[in-house]
Amino acid sequence: VLALLLGACGIEPDDGPRETEADDVPFGLLDEPSSTTSTSAAEPTTVSLRLCLLRADGTLAPVTRELPMRTTLVDIVRALGDAPSDAEQARGLTTALGADAVVMTVRNDAGVANVDLGPDVLTGSARNQLEAVAQIVCTLTQQPGVGQVRFLVESAPVEVARGDGSTTSEPL
Image (cartoon, rainbow, N blue to C red):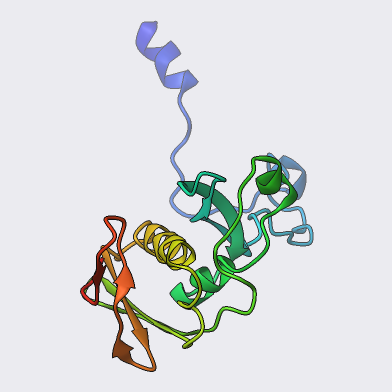
């Protein structure tokens, strides 16, 4: 009796495919596809980068700014010349670089960013020059692949002020 019951509960084997009625197809598998809509997020257009501004006492203050996605090292140095945002000004932050600071090129050679500046960028008081150099060095060394910064004017190395009062044309 048990063998008879088990045999009666089985599914008959098919020797080939057989057609199924459309009403018997489960889960809406025969429904027409709806229009396609992309659910992926839009590509970002900006990137958060750290730049160094100045406090009133002349010390450096790293800040985060949104810059265009394809920002180059020269764009980053030029961004130091932009006026501080309202939030940055509220924190008492300034910049030693003016909007008219001319940055010719910034080239990364094996971890040394060679910053070619216009001849007027490093003029002014020793303190202003030191602050400008410090901002650029602090900002660039926070970027991937940059460990040191060398300053040039018209492609020739120039001496810049160091924090100890000396000057150097070597990478900082």
